[in-house]
Length: 426
Image (cartoon, rainbow, N blue to C red; front, side):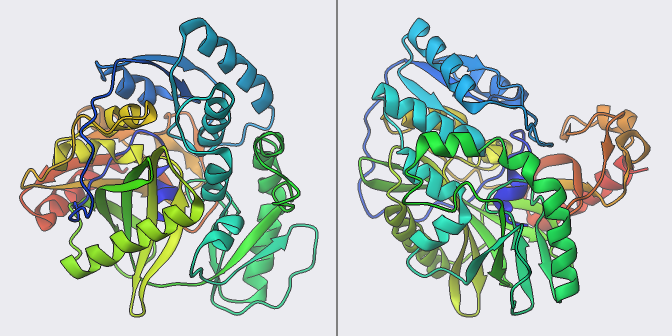
């Protein structure tokens, strides 16, 4: 699974990174206090934005789950509700920390003449087929329509939806049998998700230009092995700035994500290459007026792009604060108003990590996680209710919660997280 896919896992996860040297001066324009609409908020959004003192935030609940499909959700009716709130409170900016909300926010901002990236640019970040086609040097990627026979595939390959979070329905496949099994699961699960998006796509983009946008499909991509690094930044007035870089660390011998850590341990040469590739990609997508995060593989053949997200990695908020002393959502709010962030990240001399507590079982969460132990750990955030049944629908399992800690070294915090995970799992 990509780092951002798992990061999206909830909006209550957090991570940090290093700051490459900027090649252009950073504007020091101070953002005025403003009324800001938060689209598709969850509990973490409410808590985190309400801590930001400089602006006034208005939340319009969408009634959707970030864990399961909400096929009854009507994005057009939701846009109408948001528009009414914007008029009532004289909203001057719109923000989102979730994939679906990003495009809704872009549509609302464009309609109202407010700052923010265009709906088309956000769509390119969201729809991975058309995003690949916008890249300067994409990896191999082809659509597999759900109602068509399996074509010839070069294995190993990675099969995934054109959008979705949490690594849902994403699988490494090594044979036709594995690919058919993954497609069968997609036929059963994917349509419930796509119903949330298609009416929104019809509203947001030119379907003549992107004719497959409302077609049920999976994508088969060239399989890439390599360390992953997430680069987060923002683009404002054509100037692209880097906020942080964060490492994705997997469990030994697997592709399952153990943790995210910051600052990144990449060397200066790699950081420079990542920054250059980030700028090239954001310009190719025409993305301007907001935060973004891009996930990269570090391979023997150089930096290769995993995916682009047209939003901040708000899920890294906790470790940004632990490791870099900066509030990412305050920065998101400032940039949404058309101004540079008031506070920028800087090294605190610590390593911060966000460690996953994962299961591959199909069971009630209460049978897997010790909720009494969890309540005694302020560093641990629970993602699932004890009475909620969990089941893996990807090769990455189910994340029951995350531990966020900082220390003097990566080895030190990893050892501490391992001990905490032993206490948390039954």
